[in-house]
Length: 500
Image (tube, rainbow, N blue to C red; front, side, top):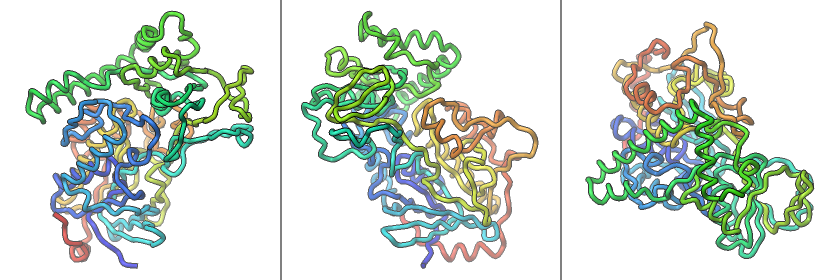
C-alpha cells in the first residue's frame, strides 16, 4: 500500500473542516494539507439532514465564518442555504481541491521516534494510508450512521410508518396524515411547524418541556447595514452585536435563573394566551441553559398551535399500538406517521481509533487542554464548538490556535507538542456542564476537564479569544521535543507538490 505524506491531515469537510482549510492556507501557506471526508459531499450536518424545515438553531452571523460574510436575508437559515454557503466558501478559497471524499478514517497512530502520525482510512473498500506531522480532527461530535433511538414496547405492531429524522426518506408523503413527533429538542421544534403545511395534524409528544425562545428569522438591522455600509464592516458589526448578546444572555441566565425563566415563559404566554397550560407543556423542571435553548423563528411553533394545526402532549410512552401510541396516562394518540426526534448518539473523533506509541488512547479517560487538544496526545487538535453559542465561533478559534502551534514548532525546530497534566490533585468535571440526554449518555466517551485552566472549558468567547488567539503557546503545560536531526530530509522528500 502506498503512503501519501502531508504536513497536516484534517478529518471532516463540514463547517469546521472547511474553516480549518482556510486558516491553514492563510496562516501556514507553506504547509501541505488534505481533508479526509467520510461522506460523498462536503457540508457535514447540512449535507446529512434532509427533514422538512431543517435550519440553523443559531444566527448565521455567528454560525457563519468570520472571513466569509453571510449575505442572505434570513439570519436563521434553512439547511440548503447553509449547505450552499459551505460549498461557496470551499470553492472561493480553493479548499475543495484538497478534499478526498468517501475516505473514512479508522485509525491514527503516533510514533515519537519518527515524530509522525500514520492515518489509516477506508475508501470504497480500499485501504488508504497517509502520514502527517499534525493531525486535526473536525469530524463533529455525533454518529452520522445512526441516531439515538430508545427501545419501546410494541413498535412492530404499529401499522403506520416510523421515521428517524437522521434517515429521512426522500419521498415521504405526509399529506393529510396524522403525524406524531416524539421529542422536544431542536429537531422536533423545527419539524412540527414545518409539517403543518401538508399534514392533517402534527402532535409533539414530549416527556419534559424544553425552554424555547423566539427570534425574527430576518435581522432588519443587519439587512439595513448590508445595504448601506461596506460589506465586511457591516458583517463584522452584526457579528459582534450577536456575540455580545449571546454571551450576556447566557451569563444572565446562569446568574439569575428565576428571572430568566420568568421572562422566557412570559414571552410564550403572550403568544399562546392566558388559558394555555404553560405549567405542563412549556415549563421545564431545570433552569435555563442547563440544556440548550430551542430557537423558534418568527413564533412559527406557537402560531401553529394557536391555529390548531399542531399540539403538544406531555406524557410518557407505555407502548406502540397498531394505530399509534398508548401513553402512561391512559391516553391514546392515533398516528399515520411517528417521527422519533429522540436525539443523537455522540461519537468522538469520527469513531477513529487513536494510538500513541503503541498505546490506545481512550478519549473518555483523557483531559481536554484548552478544549482543543487531548492530554498525552502529541500534535493533535480537535474541534468541539460551544454548547451555549454558535459552534463556529469556537471552531474558528481552535483552527487558528492549531495554526499558531504549527508555526511555533516550526520557528523553534520542534517536532512535537504534548499537553501534560501534572500529577497533583485536581477535581474532575464533565466535559460539558449540560444535563441534555445525549451528553449524559456519552459522559464516558468525551474527555474530562478540571476546575483550573488550561484544563477547564470556559464556554466564554471573550476568554477563549485571549487564550487561543493571543495566549502564550509555551505555557509550562505543553511539553515540546526537538526534531530528530535525521528526520527532516526524509519528510521534505516525501512531501507532495503544494496545490495553489
